Length: 189
Ligand SMILES: [Zn+2]
Image (cartoon, rainbow, N blue to C red; front, side, top):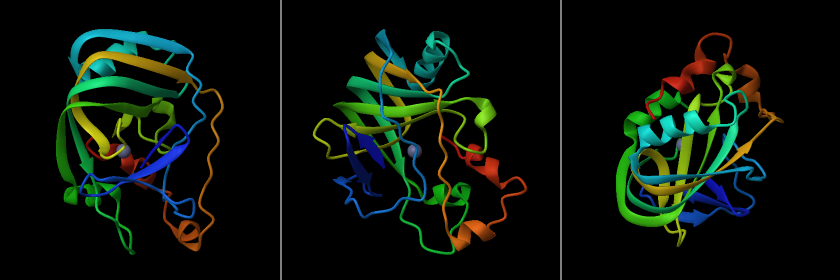
């Protein structure tokens, strides 16, 4: 899923994006009303790892979560998508074994994502997590790798974090006492 400019899109297993009806529910989402405070222009071409390192060096602080928006032309992007799941639900680490990987070259669009501090482990991914959608809103996905050309990066430091937990019997009865809350961080990104 990706939320951008007030609209939410689902990107299915085949990489096709579509607007989500207001009635549709999602098991997990991280969202914010994005108010960019910092603009960073990264000249030249860099890969995903270099993008994360550059951002780490330029963040105003690493102690707040950051919402991040990157716009531009992307020479190369690599995505994954996982198929729709049915009960009994399995850990994400198992589900991603069935992921589909796809690539786009020379696309215009927007990356939106978050950087979550280490101390929030168990509540969200640690580090960077980006989803992409093309300018025509037809395709995109969860970023695994890419090349970024003259990236225009906007940042919003978030000092207020609200967590809404599911009000379901499944959540009431789930065993979350041991290592499971941090399982999400074992998934390869
Ligand atoms: Zn994702």
